Structure formats: structure tokens, C-alpha cells
Length: 496
Image (tube, rainbow, N blue to C red; front, top):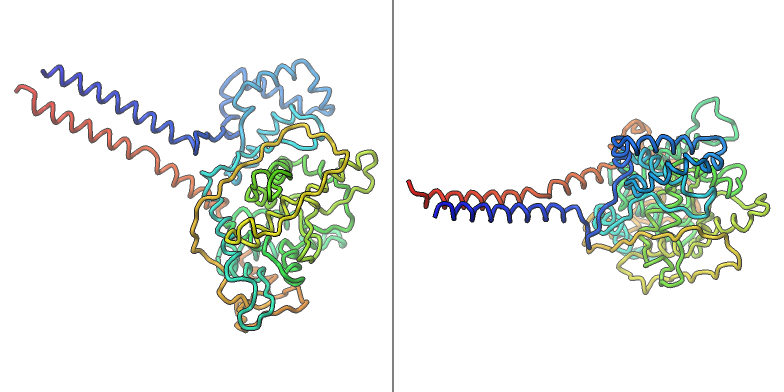
């Protein structure tokens, strides 16, 4: 009898182990069995531990740094190395936005994929891991901002005059310590010159300004940063303030306009800029088959990709203070393109005439409560007769909007409580619609805070640790309790 009970315990224990193992395996999968790809930093470490992969990887890197890259890649040894690496996890690796070693990850990605792509492909595959419904920590903030943008309307309750929603966004930012500090830092960086050695025609240190802008959008939650960029404007004063958000005199405008294809080459020489540009092309590509002209109506992904370009060589912005028919563009032209003029114009159209991007911005400004059916969507323009060939089929990210009821910081009931410069000390309850767009007091909010630094991606790291802490302990504790109960039963029935 005792042996029978012993076999029963072993059988039940085996079932419990299999159950816990299966649960652990499923916990690594996202919705509908989706599994996150291996990041390129980890894939590179695994390759270095494999002698064959490591040697081929070194050969491949040497092939890519040669002066005549095309000739080097035509070398038989280079081709053999590439064939081996295509069967390695390094080939399918991806990077996560805002990850700790993002730049290193992107460098590892392009060290493989530069050998697979032809020079100057019109579109490239994004190296970023697709955003998925499980990434709620990122999407929730954006959707919260959209909901905030649609609340309280656009009219002053006391005067009936049009108000400036961009002032609401600035006031909300000032009420958040991180947003206020980071905004003060980039405004200061984009207005100050670096040193006396700087050229007199340069109004600022452009690189320092770009870096501060990138840090702002990386470290500030989307519910505070996105309304500054995408506020819905009904008048010129608001539209001009929106255009001035990124301090275009330093971050956008230049004395001369470079050729757009040359600007693209400069961008693609930098792994971060190249990656963000590929991500923008993938997520903001226009489709004639959807109401928003964004593939699968995915305007959230388009906005994320657009923001990712700000602070890079290829920074886009609003070109003027038009509020009814705004235009997004790059600071470049197609003059001097020669026989590449069609390709240049097609590249510029992806920003200047991108109805997906414009509809995504309008959807943000009007807010999700309005609904897509009430947003004045722009119809896609028919493509010109000849466009440069697209070498790959881009797969846009698909983002499902989670159900979120946010009660976070929103604009106050009376938008007219904000002065033109969103000065916290100004208590006049009036809606200013003057033509004075520059705000001297606001431009230098707190210069003493310039040295303050937030931990990069703190909300992403917190989400990762929370996700990891909610894994398997509950399943293991249940299995342990059942096992202890069975042992006690056996001991009570065993002959003394």
C-alpha cells in the first residue's frame, strides 16, 4: 500500500512540473503567441561564444569597413561569412526603443544588414522591435495625452475667444517636475552658443541642442511631451507656438538648404539616425486602403516614429504658422539633384505630402473621444507616374489601443487661465491672442537646473522590473503546497 501511494505522489509531482514548465514558457509569449525577438546585444554575445560565428562575424565587419565596400563584399570570403551569419540569431535580432544599450544594439544590427542591402536603397527595414499590445506602458501615456487633448473644448468660457491649446500643454508640462526640468534644459541649450570659437553665423550649438531635444523626448512621458508637438490649433498664434516648440532657429533652420539626398546620406552614416528614418518610413507609409491613409489605421506608431526623428540630422518640423493646412517638412531641397531629382522629390514627399502623418497629428489634436469618423481626414494624393523602386515590403507595426480611463494631469477647465507665455506667476484670467509669439521669460525657465539628469528610460525600466516580478512564483508556491499535502497524507497512512 505504501508503494502505491509513493507511485501516486511521483505521478502527481511529474504532472505539476510539466504544468509549471508550460506556464513559464507561455509567460514569455505576448498576445496571440507573439514572442519578442532576441535583441542584437544579446545575439552578439551569443555569437562571440561560438567560434565559427565569431570568426565569420569578424570577417564580415572587415568587409564592411573597406574603402571599396562593393568590391570587398564581392569577395568570396565575405560572401561565405555572410551566408553563415544569415543562419545565426544575429541576423533576425532587433532592438527595443529606449533600451539601455540602444546605440550598441543598432550598431550590431547594421553590421550585418549593411552587407545585405544595396547602397542607397530607397526604403530600409526598421531595426526596431515591433510595438505590440503588450507595450502598454508606452501606448498608455500617448493615449492619455490624446484623451487630455480632447477635453474641455477650444473656446474660452468667459469671453468666447479662441484659445491656444499649446499653452495648455506648456502649463501641464510646467506642473510636472521632469517635464519642466528637461524642457528648461533643451530651451537653454538651443539658445546659448557653445564657445567663442563658434562661427559667428551659427546662432547656437546645434549638436548640443539636438542632444538636449533627444533627451527631452526620451525622458519625459508622452502625455506631457506629445501635446507640445501635436496640439490642435485654430489660429495663427497657436500654430506659431507649436512650430517654435523645438526651437527651430537652432534645431531646424540653417543658412542654406542642403540637398535632401545628401541629407539622407548624412543621416544613414549614423546608426541611430539611419534606424529612426527606417522606422519612420515603415510606420508612416501611406495606404489608399484605410480611412486615415495609415496602414491598418496605425497612427500611434506613426507619431512614435516621427518623434524619434527629432534631435537628429534629419529633424522635421512645421514649415510655417498655418493652422488650417499645416505642412511638415525637412530643411532641405532637391536643387542640384541632377538625374536623381525624382528620387529626391519622392523622399521629400514622404514628409511634405504625407497624409498618414498629417491625419495622425490631427487625430491626436482632436482627441480619441471625438472618434475617427469626425476627424477631417485628408485624402491621399495620387502618386506621380514614376517613383523610385521600393526594394522591400515594409511591415508596419500594429498597435491595438488598450482600454484606458486616464485621470492624469489634463488641461484645466478654463483654458484661459494661462497667459501667452504660460507663466506660472500670471493669474490673469484672459485668453491672449496677440501676435507676440516669443516668450522671453519662458525660454529660460530654470537655467540652474541645466546640470540635472534623470535616469534614462526610468519608466521603461520600472515596467520591465514589474513585468519580471509577476512571473512564476505563484505557480511554484501552489506546486509546493500540493506536494507537502501529499507527503503529510502518506506519512499519516504509513505503517509505524
